[in-house]
Image 1 (cartoon, one colour):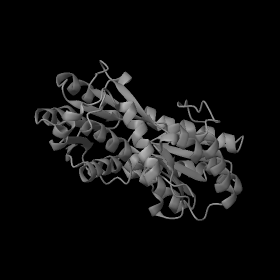
Image 2 (cartoon, rainbow, N blue to C red; image 1 turned 180 degrees about the horizontal axis):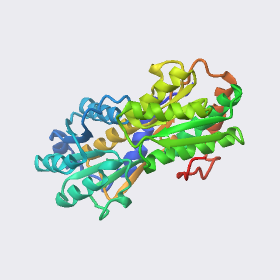
Image 3 (cartoon, rainbow, N blue to C red; image 1 turned 45 degrees about the horizontal axis):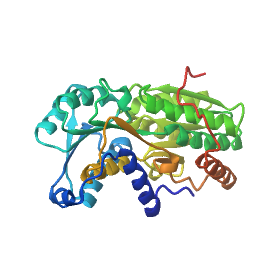
Amino acid sequence: MFKRYSSGVLAVVAAVALAAIAGAGTAANGATAKQAKVFKVGLSADEGQLNDHGFNQLAYEGLKKSERVLGVQGRVVQAASAADYVPNMAALARQGYDLIIGVGFAQGDAIAAVAKRFPNTKFAIVDVSNADLKGKPKNVVGLLFREQEVGYLAGYLSALAEKRAGGHLISAVGGFKQPPVDRYIAGYVAGAKKAVPGMTVVWGYSHDWVDLAKCKELALTQIARGSGVVFQVAGGCGLGALNAAKEKGVWGIGVDADQSFLGPYVLTSALKGVDVSIFLTTRAVVAGKFHGGADVVFGLNQAGVGLGKISPRASPADVAATRRITALLAAGKIKNIPTTVGVSP
């Protein structure tokens, strides 16, 4: 089916991404000293979200891999509320952490503020462009993804599956209306309409990342309207949307991590390499090649996004058609996929 990463691909990705992050090279006689140093990496996360089977768990896995492979000293600080972001990050900076990573769009303002106070500390922020940070701090790198690309593939496969079942409507449950969420949904809509012109796609927002009941309620409303496929783009909350899909006997689509473990009713998952981005950024810091004030963007060609496992219940013909579209997208023959959405029909 669709494979996420191979060791060879990861090596290529590492080279490409590190080149994008890299600044001036380090002198050979300084490399030995740098290797002897134990680098400290701090991860700012939301309380209770490291096991969300998605976005936050991937960030944690990226930190753990950095500890295993690169020998860094990692630490996670968890925020009970948004008010904790600034003090948590500032505490890490005062403690001499070499790299501090914010996880998610909501931490953008906090990381910009702390980066200004600690200009000699390196920072990274997942899902936020450096250009959108106040002051565009030169010691922060934005880690972005082309969610619209994998959303397109998920929408393409979903529309084919819905047509095969005799339906005409699919849906998406977003968390908050934020750029990464809307990139997923915009690609989903575009891919569905490419696969099956006239396919109706509806979406809505739970305004929550955690409460499964909110996403489940929204998904049930969409299913009652006729949706035969529900794409969850709401983190831990979205697991409630997948629960609704299972209960009602329709397809579900996971997000960020591979959520096929939930059962064969999960048609596929729209993967996002948050773990890869954190590992590669940490590696750049250890190698003395971190360069802030810019973004690193991970797309299909960088193995930063892609489809996860596809359900064994999916039609082989639909899978083959989606594979062909994946190849066209990777070859640059599908362009200008939308990244924003308006009001749901």
